[in-house]
Length: 535
Image 1 (cartoon, helix red, strand yellow):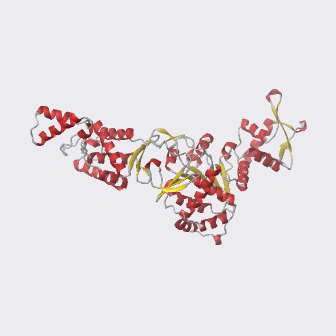
Image 2 (image 1 turned 180 degrees about the vertical axis):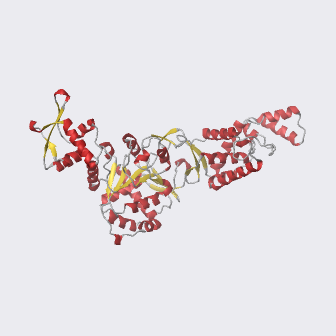
Image 3 (image 1 turned 90 degrees about the vertical axis):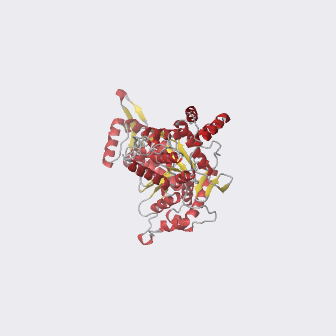
């Protein structure tokens, strides 16, 4: 590095401008981008030139004395050729200066309760605003480092040489990995709000100051107020979701969103056709969490092989989609997502990585899709709330969500805290008769074998007179699926489903299997009982 080099002697560097004037404009644009990000601007403003040799030799008194002596002579114009070489030899190389620069930036940030860091799995840069960690782009981080280096006595042409640019950035990645607090209490849930961090456990609740060690990547868009109420919201719930247990589950699930160590492995589905209040809930939840803290990817998006959508989940508290179904769903991957297990992901043009901490899942749906086979492993991860009350047009308030949002978010949050407290004590969601009934209904509507058995009024038999070739029976099932536009299950799964419905399958000669079945008008009740036993 040579801080006194002639600016007209422009090195060949990787930037879009080819003249000194163009390069200065480019640097000015970079500085403008950095200064638009308030946290980065503050860190730049408090930074200054760095005396690299003094910091480098801080533990060596003799070299510090020699450095001071040579500098005095230099200022008096009396350095010999050997002394000039000796002074230059006390200067650390640029790789060391990068380390010193980065450590000084981190110290400055800490002093003003700000922060910089890299999430280790995704190599995603974050800045700490004093309230929460905010993700920024890699190009913006690189530009910030270049501007900081320029202010800390690096020549702004030299530092933007592509090799120097990358080495400085890579050194930052190596030094500034964000490490979670290993002493964090597992039984506490922390929630980040405008006026502090709310901490709740089984035994206590308190509001405390912000702490960068919490590694919050969000901040709720309102203040905590213990006295706030939500009368209009509760009146709305009483109308559209009258069952008290269902209301309790909704509050508990919205509290569950903020937990990391409570592994209940559930997603919430709001079901109902027509004007029934689901969209109002959707708007209120988005406002409660903040639109920038929620996403709306479909199951198909999340199960996509490229992993791009999954790569974004770590930046959100909740994935809330209006679509439940979709094509190309990977059952194993979907179960992992709902269970919040580590999953593979990747960013476009980036390397694959493992995402570990990510949001919970909610879905709105008018009806259960008939083109997806939801197995028991799927269904045990669903909680379904039924919005069955249709609100007449003359009673609908198109602005209800906005009215509630404008004055009751803090009150709704207190209602959610009640649900979270209940969840922490119970270690499970409240049981709802209606939710259980809906789960059984969903299991039936997504089980083409059960629908076939009921439609044909088939029940098990033990009589040889009711002995049917299993192959023929399955062909009848396939024809039924074709007519009803259902997806038939494979042969092995068909046999498994048939056995779960208490039908007996017998092996015969010549590799043929037989089923004992007869038609009966009590088939519907029989199927419902069998499915209920499975749940």
